[in-house]
Image 1 (tube, rainbow, N blue to C red):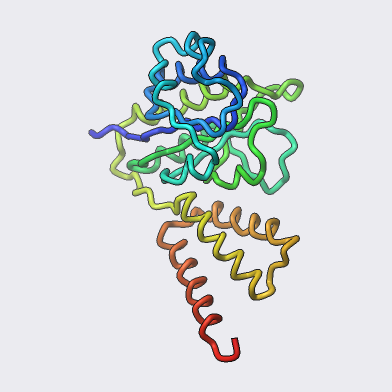
Image 2: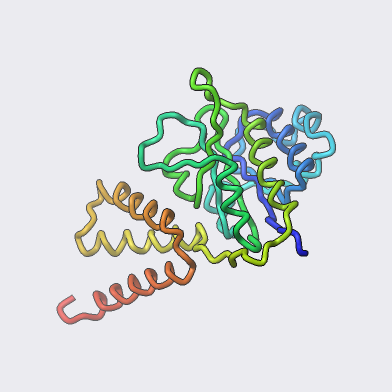
Length: 247
């Protein structure tokens, strides 16, 4: 039977420790990650410190792609996951265990280009950055000291996902057809402009309301076809507004 292929991209957002970067490059080698990507690094990722920690993972440092924004780093990916260890999250941010998300991923036959976002060592990912993800990992630790080292968090997530890639594709597995992060982002950018134009959204409240809409669509596991229907409706309303008499 065919093995699962996740084509996994590890995406580090603004890492500030070369030792962590080197350790993660080594983990990428351990778990045969497809690619290491880094968004706006705050340290010298090519330093001797990083290379010493990477050992046989130095190829991931040599070949890593550097981006100036999360959007550019993930928009060629079909599925985006994010990690979050913060305890100050609002109630409407839904986190799941690595085991639960891995089990969900295992229900699909194949996922091309899976990205995992790992946040900054000191403050993780912001709420707006978490909205790029279809699902959010949370690793349960002691309530007295919940913070994990970045490379340790990466090792736990990669270990869980590695178990999926070792499994055979089940005949009952579903075809992956969720709307991509890029599709959702672009659709809601257009929707926000339209709703401001019609007066439904105000400038000072638009971000909050659009964020709630996005969360709803992510929870609903919206397909590519469904998000394209939404986009078609927005385009048609814009066409009508632009071409109606008295406009």
